[in-house]
Structure formats: structure tokens, C-alpha cells
Image (cartoon, rainbow, N blue to C red; front, side):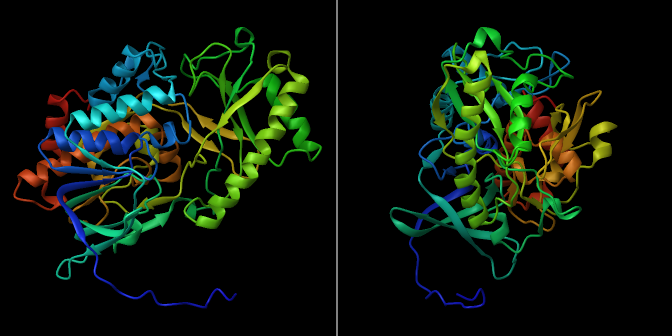
Length: 443
């Protein structure tokens, strides 16, 4: 069938099922934190999530450990994210005392604790629901008045004063007139997708399980040699790392494995689908290689693969400010700082098994303006769509930083709602910073 063939979808009236102050689209690390922050600051908040649980890349993607709460042993992330990991720890679901501030965790505890915190804040959750479109104001085209959703009840609308896109891939923002780009536009490359999996039956006493310290690469050198040989012999298409450790599991005898790798654009449905198909094939190839070559893995077995392919980068907003490599490597102070970063500049190559890592020397500031699409009236992003160059984003993209940015976005929308529904650009970033500090964030 020709790509140019088209049909026209008939227009129809949609029921407006809710009227809220803030719609948060996506319940991943930035999204559920954003929803909590908005609600705690007085906004009537609705959280939309595709799956039947919260956590996004941490749970559906099994991407662990959660990085990065510390830099050189000192806390750089506080506030609601720190509260969250403390609650997980209290339920036996996280390791929180590593000097690096990387947090291995149990995904089931993550799902439960995040859900309880969201509900306790007074947020309403709609699971099994996707935001599929937006309606914008006729008078102000960059002001979203309704978010269109799809679920088992069909196609419906949510009236809202503010929207926070925490989908990670910009699914909502891309359906508005606001400006965005594909992040790899400079060199045509996007960081590869990965399907995490978990193994049991591993002699974990013989494996380095914890990413406990800064300035170290934790790829398993023995396993890498075996995978590289298989790659050269044509048995395996590509791989990364591999990292086989306590990331999204903390139980003896189990490891979570970050090893599969495939190039593609996860914002394109067919490419994301093809990635899932091919990466699942690679999972079984990699397990066979581990079992046949490594004494620690000779009795291993597959517990599960992640429901969701792990996505490192796709869309980015064109923001009111773009975070740059210089902002990461030579930190500068921003009056509207809303979060701190400390992860290395970490670029996984799509076409090879290589990883380019540049360790940083000090924590850096992330500004509020990088969460605002240029010209936005009432739309913010959290997490993966932040305005940042590829190199800068290669540091910012990790989960703890996304959580902190979620708290900033949620708090900002609630403050704007209190300002007689002011436009996002009318909020003084220094005021937001002050409120975040008062509520425990490290800014």
C-alpha cells in the first residue's frame, strides 16, 4: 500500500469526563513525582498511565539501579524523590546507602510505594489510558484546553488548565503546535534501545553486584569478552556492557541484565515494535552464551523480560533554555535552578558495542526554563524531553534527575494555578526555586 494513501477520520463529539487543574501524562519516574508535587501544592491533579502500574522505565522497563542521588558521597537529590526511596527502603525494597547514590530496588515494591504516595497526595489515577491528542485554544494556539485520551471506554476528553508531558518520548507535546525536534539531529544517531531481563540461579557471590562508587565502569569484563566473540562470529547482532548486577532486583541469586542493544527511533511505532521482536531474540542468545561460558551463570535461568523496551532518547522540546555540555562540565549557577545533576556524560553507541563515558568533576545545576517549550502557555515537560543537547542529555537523562525535574514541573503548575491560572512564563523561576527548597528539594 502506498505511503501516500490516506483516509479521513470522521469528526465526532467527545465526552469531557473530567475538569482538573493539572493533567500529568505518564506515570514514570518524573510523572508520578510531578503528580504528587502538584497535588501537595493544592492543584486538582489527574495522572494518566498506559500500563496498570506506575514507574515507567523503572518498572515496565526494569531499568536499574536508579541513578543518581549522590555525588562523591553527598546527596544531590532531596524532596519527594528522597522520600520515595526512603519508603521503599522501609518496605525492604531498596538499597539506599551506596556512596554513589545508585539505588537498586524491587520493581514490585516500587509499583506499590509510588501508587500509595500518589493516592495519599489526593491524585486521581487513570491506568490503561493513553493521551492521544490535544485540543488547543483558538485564541492562543499554544494553550492546551483539553487532552484527548483513549482507554477501554473509548475516546474521551479531559479539560485542564495545565499539562505536564512526562511520557519520556514527548507523545503529548508533539501533538501540539509547540516546537520540538528529534534529539539526534546533529549526527543522525539516537542512543540505542535495550530490553532488560532478569536472571535467577546466578552465583551472585562471584559477581560484582553493586554500582557503589563514582568514576567506575561496571560492565562485566568476562561476560563482555564472550559476547564480543559471538558478535564477531555473527551469532549476535549487537550488545552493550553487559551490566549484570543488582539493579532492578536486590535478591541473592538474581541479577538484572542490561546487555541487548538495537538502533532505531522509539518515537516511530514500527521501529519500537521491531526492536521488541529482535531484542527478545537477543535475550535468549545472550543467556545461552552466559550459561555456556561463565561458571557464575552456568545454572542461570530467565525470570522475566521487561514489558517495555528501554528507551534512551527520542524527542526533545525546543525550550526557553537549552542545557549544554558546558553547563554540565563547567557548572554555572542559574537563578531558576530546580534540580542538580551528577551522572557522567554517558553515550551508548547505536552501531557498535561501545559506550562513551566522560566523568564529571562536580554536581551541576539544571534550570526551570529547560522544561518550558518555547512559547508555551500551559504545557511543561518533565524528564526525557528536557531541552538539552545530546551530550548534556546523556548526563541528565537518568531517573533520579528526572524525578527531581518532575517535582519542579508539578510544583510550577500548582503555583501558576494559584496565580489566577497564570501562563507558565509568568512564574518567576527564583520563586519556584525557593518553594522547592522549602519543600526539601536540593537546588
